[in-house]
Amino acid sequence: MTDAAAGAGAAASALPPQPVPNADTQGFWDSLAEGRVALCHCADCGTWMHPPLERCRACGGPTRFDEIAGTGVVHSFIVMHRASVPGQPAGAHVLAAIDLDGVVGARLTGRVVGIEPADVKAGTRVSARIVDVPGGPYRQPEFVADAAP
Ligand SMILES: [Zn+2]
Image 1 (tube, rainbow, N blue to C red):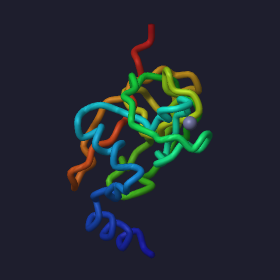
Image 2: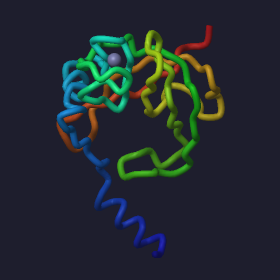
Image 3: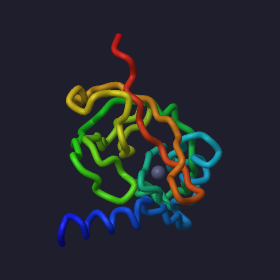
Image 4: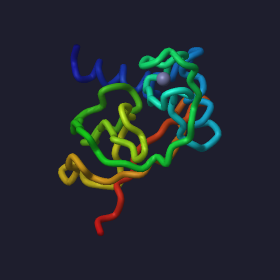
């Protein structure tokens, strides 16, 4: 494929892929639509799960979606230097797995913004904010780096 052909394809599909909720994940997307971040949590043993499951992977108990603070630290990350999917920034940007305050055993992934990619480190403190997924009705979390102390 030539660069011209790649550019034409990118322009034709500049919107990102849309989430496809199912019975297990619907509560996660519903919470984001309501402006909060909630993760799947076992009502019996307290195990956190993401991706969500209908039944607890540890004890088989029923699960529910419990709101979390949305704050945490970067566990690991990559710096992307080009868009990995349509609708992503063309320049350098960070995708990270986030260890969430008050959540053990589950992480969220997302973009880290508000910081130069070269300055992101494991342990960088972040706070979730909910943003629209362009091209559809869904919202998603991205993570804003906290200001340096
Ligand atoms: Zn359980």
